[in-house]
Length: 58
Image (cartoon, rainbow, N blue to C red; front, top):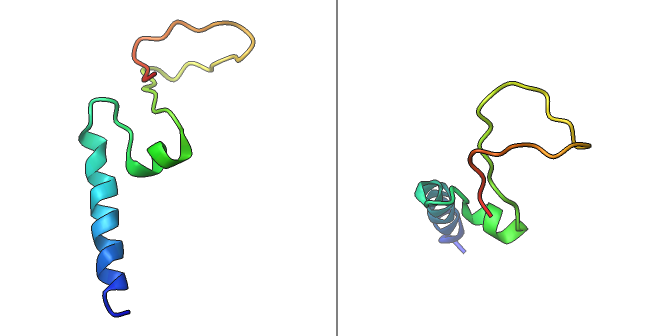
């Protein structure tokens, strides 16, 4: 049981290193099925009308 904290540290490190992937998704994003998007401006986004995207991960 003394190895559990060590395993947790390695898993955290691996999760953080996944940010360097091309799609910028970490392990927790892959598990949850979420997508990472890049927001380039501070403009308020309306969900009612389609938005022009410049960088999005499919």
